[in-house]
Length: 196
Image 1 (tube, rainbow, N blue to C red):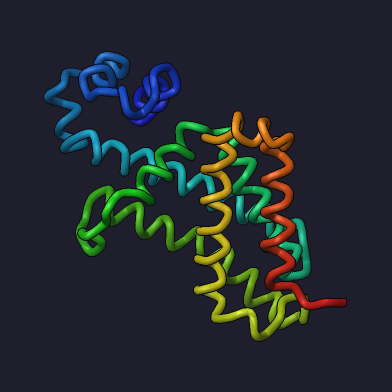
Image 2 (image 1 turned 60 degrees about the vertical axis):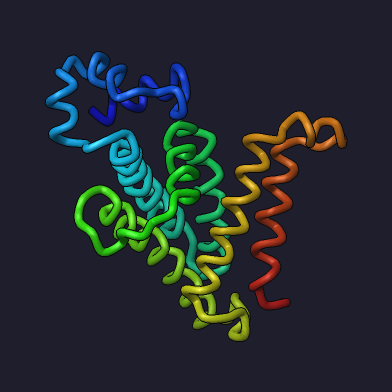
């Protein structure tokens, strides 16, 4: 079902995707689709959960390639950018999840699964920040590691939204989306790095 939803969303976008189209693409009855996903939002949360699992794996691979915490943080940022470029449907599903009011965090189902998956992704970044504080590559006064993680994520998530949706505006100012993303990564890393 999630493969079918990704295919439909890639073809027409998440906003235009319907449960009926997903059921047809998955070769299922609509009734069976609703057994697994109660509505389109629930299906979106299913896509988010898959996206976060992929992102966690990318973060783990990124940190494994570096010893210093600050290098691991930067590698996670680059992995996030690469993920958004490689998997635009998943990146869009995450953006929609972030914009969605999550008042049922403790609930079971796909919303709760997304929250837990997000926690696992942040845990990788938090560990890299803690490692950087311990090895001296990240300033000890940068802030509590979990707060720093959320702040860096929010910053880069916003920049990714600009890069995705405002390419023409950037071009009008003589800039490329890659320049914007590189500058964001540079500023994010510099904001917490020790000066050596």
